[in-house]
Length: 84
Image (cartoon, rainbow, N blue to C red; front, side, top):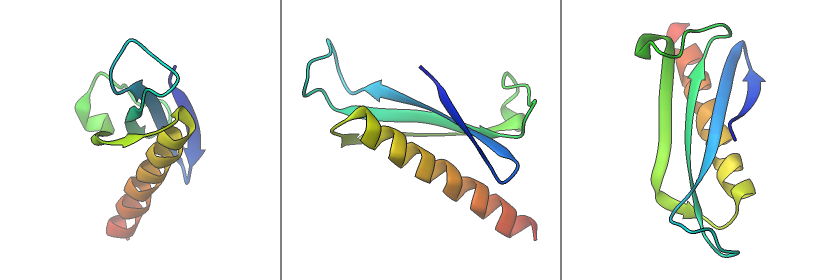
């Protein structure tokens, strides 16, 4: 299930993804996510910045979510810094 946080005027959406299936108690996770402005049309690539991690594995869904939100916040912070 997609989860969202608001951060410095942006939305950061993240989705933990099982690295392989079927799910078992020790199945690791990856993540997918995107950053956009509130109200953006996500069907248009120019209105969102997508990011993901499919190489590293995270032992729990919570670790994947934490890493994904950190990556999303880094994208926002970099975008704001380059705009100034």
